[in-house]
Amino acid sequence: MKEREAKLDAPPGFELPELGGPDDGLAAEPRPARRLQTTYYDTADLRLARWGASLRYRPGEGWTVKLPEGQHGVLLVRAEHTFPGDGRKPPAEARALVRPFVRTAELAPTVRMRTLRRPVELRHPDGSRLAELVDDEVQVLEGRRIQARFRELEVELDDDADADVLDQVVDRLVAAGATA
Image (cartoon, rainbow, N blue to C red; front, side, top):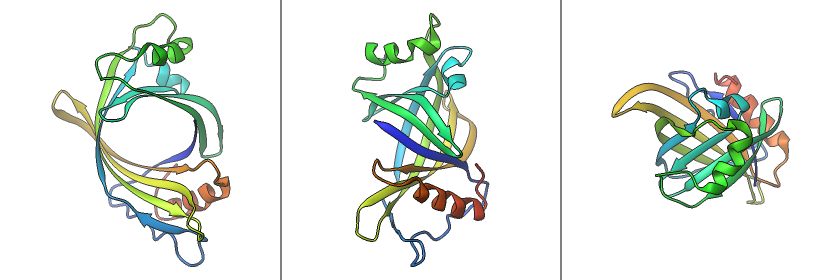
């Protein structure tokens, strides 16, 4: 599966702008908030992160590998691969995908995060889904202690959506104070 998304930082006090007005050509439909627990795996010198790749585990979702395929302005294009499994050890298939990036280095948990995700589905007036905007409040954990906090916005296009939708939504978010 290909992931086409833009990521933006949301400063303290940022408020999502109104999306889906009559001039937008899309409808915005807030979805229920979700809480996520995520553990990212990498090498001690962060080889995956430096290459723009990632390996993560989320309870209930399993393992996800994201591999870079390019960038066009704020649009990131990555191949996304998912695998079932528990959180004890990345599956062999996932390790094989990241092996070209990590070479012989060992993979280990490098960061744990707790996220409150507030999704908004963006739809064409005919009802077809175009994208999902998520507003994530993230806590980076060290043991049980919160080491850092940040807020991030992601706009992920659906497979059939035109990149113009992404540009339109990103422009609106930047005008409201978000930064790429």
